Every structure is written in C-alpha cells, then in structure tokens.
Image (cartoon, rainbow, N blue to C red; front, side, top):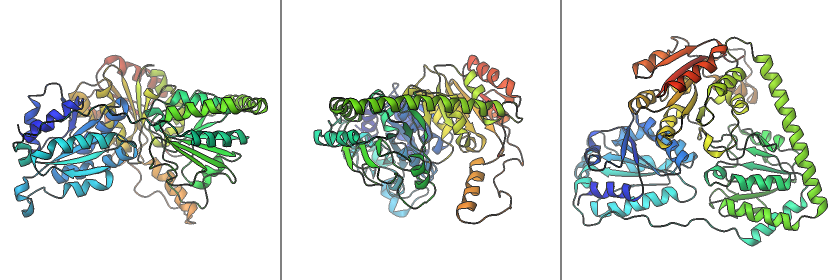
Length: 554
C-alpha cells in the first residue's frame, strides 16, 4: 500500500468525517484518494485561514478531532493565525500541509520551506513524515497528542513523494484511551478545609468546564458554598448557566481590575481555564489581599502556571468537583451552611437588581439611531430560533450580547478565543458542518467579517443553514477603545482623532459581497425590522446574510 492509503485509513480509524481545506498541487495524493473514501467529506475553503478556523470550531462544537489540509509554505503561513487561535481555544485539530518532493528539498524548490519549524510555535507537536513506513506511527501520535489534555492543534507535513511511497505498515486504530484521573483525596481534603474556613468564596470558571461536561457539578458546588461565578475575560464556551442567580460576567483583562472585581473574597476557586489572560499590565496580584487560592485543572500545565495557589488539584473536573462538594457537605456545620444560604439569597437579589439596571439602560438606548448595541442584540435574540447554535464575534458588543442571549447549556454558544479576529464567519462553517441538524446564527462585526469573508462562499457551496448577522458601524471600534486606554495608561493624553480605524471610505457592502458568493442578503437600518429580517432569513433555509447598521463609538 502507499503512504496516502495509510494516511486516509488513519483518518477513518480515528473516526474522521470531514477534512477542511484549500487544495493545492502537493495535496494531489490526498485529493485523488478522497474518491475512494466516500465516508469523508472535503469542506472547501477559499483561504487557508478560513479552513483552520472552521476546523477549530467544528472540533470545539462536536468534541471530535478535526483535520485540515493546507498547501505548502504560503498556505501554512496563511493558516498560522487561526492555528494560534485553535491553540488558545484548546481545539483538537490535526493540521496537515502538502510538502514538495523530499528528494529536491535541499535545492529549495518553489513554495518549499521547513514546514514543521513554521508550525512548531503554535502547535503542541509539529513534525514531517520522512518515509512512508512511519506514516502509521506519526498519524497515531498526532491524534493522541491533539487529544491529550490540554487539547490543541498538532501539525504534520506530508511530502508528495512520501505519500506515494510503498509501505507494509498499515494504519492503526487508536484503542480505548481512558484519560480521566480521579482527584487526590488529600487535595480534596485540603481544599475542603480552606472552604470551611472562608466566609466569602468566589469562583472563576474557564472553558474546560463546558468542554468536559462538568457544568452541573460546578453548579451544585457553587450553590453549596454560596459563591458567585465569574467567567474568564475571553470565553469560548458557556461553562455556567448565565441565567443562574450566581452567574456574573467576565472578569476584566488586567490584574488590578480583576483584583477590584474580586474584592472582598477570602477564597478564590479557579476551575478549568487560563488564569488569567491580560491585555494591559498592572502591578500586583489579581487576587484580593489575604485571599486563599484553590485551582482545579484536568492537566498539569495550567495549574499554578501564572500564579501561586494554596491548593492545586489535577483531575477529571467532574470527579474533582463532585468529590469537593461531597466533602464540604459532610464537613460543614450548621452555622457555615446558614451563612452559605444567606450568600445565595444575596446573590439572587443582586442578580435581579443587575437585570433591572440593564433593562433600564436598554430602555434609554432603545430609540437611538443608528441602532444601539442593546437594541440590536435584543432584536437578534427575538428573531433567532430557540435551538440555534450561536457563534459570536461582536467584541465591543459582547456585554450586550451576553445580556440578550442567555445560555443555560454548554452546546448553545461558541465564542472566539486567542484574540485574533476573523474567527466568527469561519467558525460558523465548522459549527454548522458539525451540527447539521441545527440552525446557526453568526454574529460578527464588520471589521472582523472581512478577515474571513470567503466563508460566505463555503456556506453557499455546502448549503449550510447559517444566518450571518453583520453589525456595521464602519470602524474598528475595539481599537478606538484600546487607544483611549493606551493614552490614559501611558499618560499620552491627546485630542487627536483615531488614526486608520474607520472603514467608511469606501463603505463596505456586505449584501453585495454576499451576492457575489451565492448568499442572498438584506440590509437593515431600521431597528424595528431587525427581528423580522433575522426570522425570515432562518425560515428561508440555507445561508443568508443580514447587514445591520449600528451605532459607532459614542
């Protein structure tokens, strides 16, 4: 058999159903072999970054390992940014790229480069297959490493001649991998003792709680100890029900602001995340003075990586949270339980007060023209089916988005991790491919949308039921906010305008762009028409685009 047969058989053995890619000449062995593997669908992208972004969201929304096929050095280079985002999102993705014939690589042929070296900084493992005899072992290891906690992308370079070499080493099935470790009883006992001794606990939750199905266990523990639950500053999943009385918002993106947000807490419980991702440097710890810190992770690497902790536990998150809840229930006396119940009641009152305050803010902004952020999110929610999977990259509208779209189940929402923009449109492709029975709403700003606008063609080509809601304010609004912050933080106060941050000359026409790629669209400037336009787009079936004019930076 040939190397390409072993490669394709490896995909089948690992349950691969889709390859996301942009074809090129060095990928000819893979493309030709596809004809013999009808169980694997090739999802066509018009740009390599879009292929990686789609694969990442596919993996995140399904839990299945995604496979990407890129084209030599420029194609891999085009995909690097999205591979970085996949790394930050802990998405299990096997990225491949066709390489030039290995017999002439020393002569540096056109489009060639050291592909494994290019990919290494943004992957968990990066390698090149040198002979067909090692194809089976390389592919087995690639899938294993991508799925070892913390999950993430790996890269395999596939020289065209190696894909055509003969080998007697066939593909290997992965076997049953049991990775869920039980928590150390001593660690649970130590964490329980700290919880017993605290009077004001706080939880900060990361994406891994949703990915590992530990949400209900976290809810039970949070209710037991009477703790508010904050989210990571940038989140890609709904790890805690947003409608729950204990649910708060995302923590800020600098240590001083996080410390202020958590003020009053005497214990901080960190569960399943990157704590903390910052944008701006500030002195000091993100934790309130004197607060004890407990961290629970499913892998050793993130544990106490950025900050010292008092107790750290590496274990299956569900098992650890259940064990801790049982320990607290058994150890806590009546006074402690009464205090926890009082904290729960206070959190419910606070949640109701915050909801009323936001409703008043939304009412004040309701009639503004162009459409205000609170109004557009409320109208989008009104027009979206209850069973839709929502992919969001609205960035500066994220607060209003979170207020309008309440997510009580982990499979309802996918957000952008890593900070690189352009993930929304690409990600919606992968989310839809992985969840064909559900409609998908993609909410994106206009600046972000232009990074992966080619996704519209892929949606039309594969007839995917996605409604793309493009929020048009004709500016990079997030950059204006960040420039304001920079000027304040570095004492660079200025009355100068915002340079190179407007997108109005010429104005982008998303309805026209969509039409050119086979996606019908409609432009909406009246907020009274937003919900109906979105509802009609979903009812039409297939991909649709709704361009919505919104207010700019005020």
